Length: 458
Image 1 (spheres, rainbow, N blue to C red):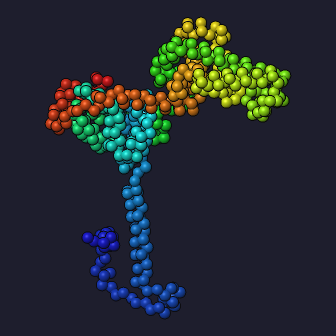
Image 2 (image 1 turned 30 degrees about the vertical axis):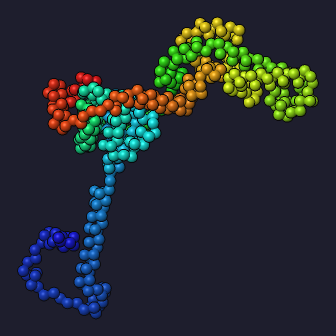
Image 3 (image 1 turned 180 degrees about the vertical axis):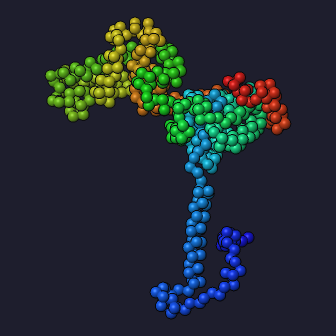
């Protein structure tokens, strides 16, 4: 192979005009160093000038070659955008090496899958073929893709033409996955415009490809996280109720099952609050500033200094607190915890003596109006354990909503995983390439195309 110098010299020879015989045969005058100096020039041999010219030319061409190489070889920063739809739908941002840089949920069902950190770890940073197959497998485990149903379908959409080869690779990977699992499922691959991609990914249709690329690359993972940023408190709570499910019905059933316990707890809290008030107002209270039961016990521990009446009040309070702890498994560590509990009961629309009648007649609509307070008093009364109690508390801020939603989604994930496990693990025979091809050709023959099959069945 010729060297790059030789190639350049050959190219220069081709473009240099041919010299005439007269010029070629003309004698070359020789100049001495002295003659050049006498003419006011610099004493440099002609061949040295030619050599320097060639060095400059070679250097320039070499720089051009390096620049061209950098432009052609350096990886491009752009990404491919893909949406995978089953029922839960997600969008992937994929770099020029074929690795997933981000995944975002398109709908609430996808939130359930992507709520788990382990799932996200097995998608982001992985090769797109591996990531799509893993996501599809998760959807099947949670019952979103029914392995017992012939003709279940997955649609993979790529934005613009540069995703064609990637779609072919993903389709082949998913087909291998289904045949190895013994599942006759359809893989629909589709290249779409930016506008169509926006519709399938739940994005604003006015976005350009650049805007769309940024949205998929930089967006928060879950739909619930993204939507929460612009919600009011009422909208947050309404959305949270919808996520939890039959929230009001659940609350109503728990209230009716525990009316007596709630009444007993309300009475006990009210009694403790009244006793502490009597201690604070007692003329025999030894404290000047902090007069509540807990402060007196801390700063005036010597009960022998109490008057008979004040000592009786302190002893009664101590006995009532011990009884409360035994009955409800909780205790009040200070005045303010007791104050908070009593305040919750006082926020109900009826006084304590009418509370039983009100609870007996309560409806789902009333539960909806007072669900925040009711969830608090049921937790105070020990009607619900801490986990369920926390689940039933409605969020008041975006931060609370995001945190509580994540917990609810993860519980939904675990519930669906257990519910659909039997169908997923059922033994199935691997499907041969010929049988699968025959199945696909049959669908195309009946519907005209796999895309048309998706449109009709979804």
